[in-house]
View (spheres, rainbow, N blue to C red):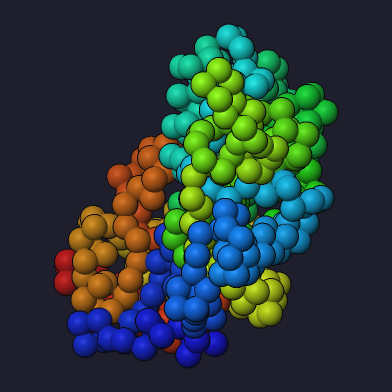
Length: 398
């Protein structure tokens, strides 16, 4: 499988590239690179606006990807799939449009203490705009949601938005029962699947959620394209987020009639070739088998955690019972940014910092972590090089 990712053949500072920054963005297989290259070379045109062959042909391919995404998420119909530019844009869309539909002064929005900033800041803005209040479900010392008293947090809540997998710690949240309990109270539910989509099934009907968002670049696809799933009756009721071409039925200087969802939320020329890349990425994952990839990644995570915890002065941050392929850790006496710089000298690419999850760092009383995250193309050699590089880092700072 590794040979399908050409970027991994290079060396960094004379060392084989050990790419363990997959939680930030995954590398792209040849299937995705070649699909996008072929589109630019042989198929490119603007879509939905032309009667000529190129436009008609690429429009059909573009629309087929929407159907493919719907099948991948087990959505009820393709019209429940909105193309965005990222998870972040999808969450901002919901904070604006869903907020306008359902929020009024005094209402509450429930988040968890594990959220990425993209699932915090848009809701803070919504609270300011609509007079709502933000409520936060806490986590325990293992980095797991403390949902033992979940019902107490639901009073007055209109929207519950939560990550399926923590990008900072790798915790897999068991959201389905929480979603069911929230929906029984008439609460609108949102799943941030950015960190989950490449590692476990994101079946919207099994989850029971009203909305789900993810980015293609987290699942071997290109940047600049994301997905928002929404129950159609809610999408139909929500006002547009942005306005312009392609999201209208008719325009006069007196009044505009909007198109139906999903087009209502897709103003302007879309990221056409990126959508083709997303389709190729989903084909690649489906061909390999998501369950097979998840098993492989879990084997690597367990082996890496076992090897890392044997090192003195290393502390794993986030020890949840159920985790995705993410390991966050600190080294005694060494700032994560310094550690990341030294690891890079050994060809090991990890992410250091707060991972856009400053409240998580604050919960554990640390400024930042070193985060190693695994994907389909990683192997046990990558673990050996990571551990050796960490040991070299510790020796350098002795």
